[in-house]
Image (tube, rainbow, N blue to C red; front, side, top):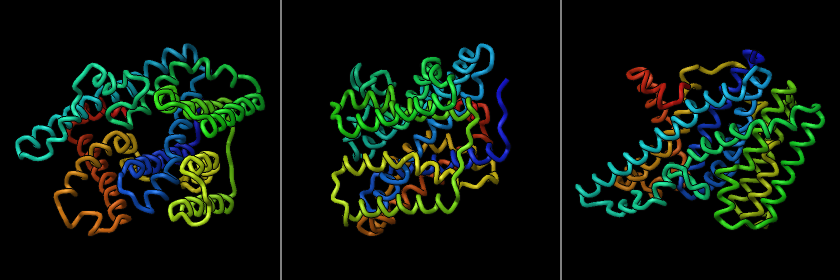
Length: 353
């Protein structure tokens, strides 16, 4: 039987999931600005690792059940594989529609290159090329997470030992991967494989989530320390954005931020309230994750047609913020309306979430 969790923890997980989905949207807003450096390339980097931790945590609650592997894997066919395939087809249909509109309006013919034109293109589109991200880029997470679920018996075996042994195993994994990714230069195909297919970040954080649930570990941090840690990270990424003091290369900055990610995740987790936000809002976390890239693409085309919405008129920071907020808001509206008008379709597209 699944080990139950307190309602306050359930609310906190839902709140954190919604916040991280919003941060993922800001990661993908392609407007060079100081805010992009601070949010999209800074604090938002905590989002995907947290999703791996949460996924491992939820799986960890079933590890004592009989025949857990077959049961949980079948669940994830519905919650991961079906949304992956469904939204890949939505992406293909979206690109085809934009292409037709471009031809009819005699604009945007460069979109011809966006349609798959070869076997390798179609393999990449449907995530069958392990050395590239899928065409709808956020779907790499669903692919990587399903692979981790397939490998979960191997990943969990060292965690079933004592709490101390499990902690040392995860710490060793994290140190090894951080060191390799920081100081070893991988060629792009293998780098993509280790980041977006057999995600080593995913292995570390997914294992950490399983360990937390398996050994019933509760992480606590004083709120004052959480605020201090968050402020330090914000100051660092602001320093990176303004290029003031720390003369680090781009890779050096990324390595430092990845080193601080566990502290950043724990700090934000501590500060997220235990009181539940409205369920209709937190339940849109997965739809935001799935839909925001399509909406950002549409907003790019819309903003290009309206001179008043150009970065030159709005300013880069306001333009970045506006696109991100609109993508989130429109994703929420889409999810709420789809669930109200077509509940079965919504359940299918959103994997029953």
